[in-house]
Length: 424
Ligand SMILES: *Cc1c(COP(=O)(O)O)cnc(C)c1O
Image 1 (tube, rainbow, N blue to C red):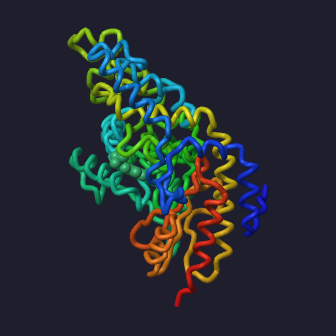
Image 2 (cartoon, rainbow, N blue to C red):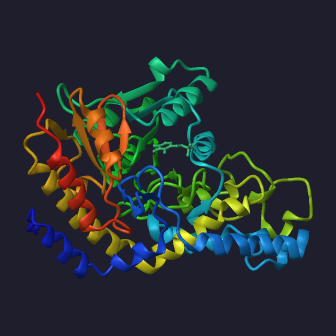
Image 3 (cartoon, rainbow, N blue to C red):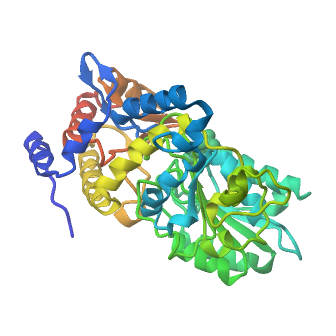
């Protein structure tokens, strides 16, 4: 379906009136600029605070004050089993069975923990394949995992680059490299949506190709979770992890998430590093010797749940549950399509949208690559109450987030860009 847009302000107003998700905007706090809500395009970096967080946080504080240690069993959401409250709603967001997901730790920590299980070089299989230009934390994680096993990153890490002169990676090149690496390949670990370009990879095809050569396949879904449709279970992905402070609005440093496919999660022989919180719940407080993993991804937990750090996650997942990923995605495609359309009408500024044009190949983020004056344009946006995101060397990322951005936000951004004088 070809969406029809135009550049009138009335178009934006009408779309906002027609938008059934419009009221959800009211559930979030917006930073202020000159007494007005900012136009917030930075949900890909840090999502806004759901208003219900304060109430839920106070409730947790009261439970601690009232119950002390007994809160493990008597709190409104007992801390002993706190992570359970997320399972169903998280599973719906990533397309998993509820035992396959767990909220724990933080993203890079989870990436390491899962690589400990899924990157175990043996019998000549030791290589890790990833996308070039991965988020630095992922690059460091992979580099140091490889070193921990005594390999040199230059030899053991295969990075897939865009072709000469291109910004995006050809999926065909990933699949071909997987096949060529064949039985020396131990693991494919790719960012599901690239943080810089916004490219959304075909995770199912990559998983299949990886399994065909006998390797494991895992994804960092930091920019995918809560943004694009995922079917981790059906796609047979081995593992995945994500942070929750981006599209999932769960606050700075918010608890991370992990997915382990049930065929591994329910296999007690699957190697993992353990702590008491991953132990079978019925015997967790018996303080016995001998780790007995509980079923599913939850057995990768180590420490008792950081309850205060999970409150915002609870608040945010409530909203996701009410909206549903399907409705969110439908609006997202239309809204980002509109933003892209508006940007393409701007001819007097020199920039290129490097994010894929096809909605299937992207989420809501659009990355605009500028010449040398990108930074100055970014400053103009900031001065005018637009919160965008600057990435070195010359990219402005904007994310019209379907949960709280409006068509009028997009229009406003367009209007500001239109007032900037033409470049030399
Ligand atoms: C945001 C992001 C991170 C950040 O990692 P933390 O451990 O949460 O600090 C890592 N990897 C990717 C791909 C990201 O987008």
